[in-house]
Image 1 (cartoon, helix red, strand yellow):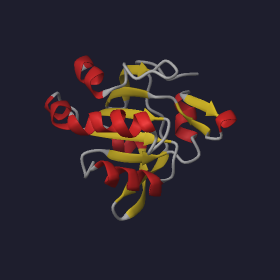
Image 2 (image 1 turned 120 degrees about the horizontal axis):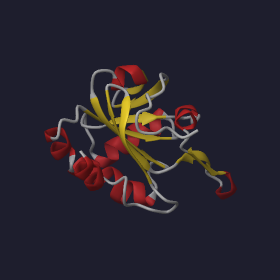
Image 3 (image 1 turned 30 degrees about the vertical axis):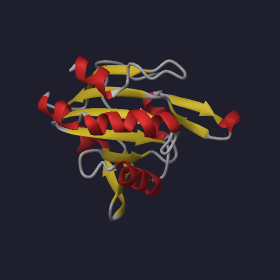
Image 4 (image 1 turned 135 degrees about the horizontal axis):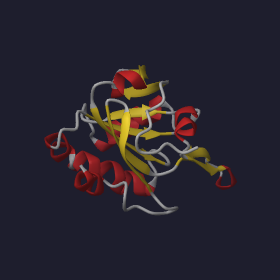
Length: 160
């Protein structure tokens, strides 16, 4: 079942890609007592994700923070080394938490997995963005297949 507005973010451990390498992080530590924007991409270093999705959040970081967002999180079904390298490549610095969901367990718990096995990419995440306040989803925007409208930074900024 897909997560929806009013639901609580699942309590799980994931890996964060950092400059010092992989670091385990609990979703409770990310979301508890904070306003968080989490956006998910089908894959690091992929065309739309690298040219538009992540850069849009990097460019709008200050505007999102000005709207009361405490943390921005980028999620992909990749490993923490890839997410760390992608963050460095995109110049995210400390502004965005680069979260790795290597086995897609968190993505599946959200009900937002995307089966790309026939295309040789395995199970990935659908492209989406959500806003959570103290771990409760207050806004959810899931893209139609191939779409890039409702989950982009400007759309989330307008929804805040």
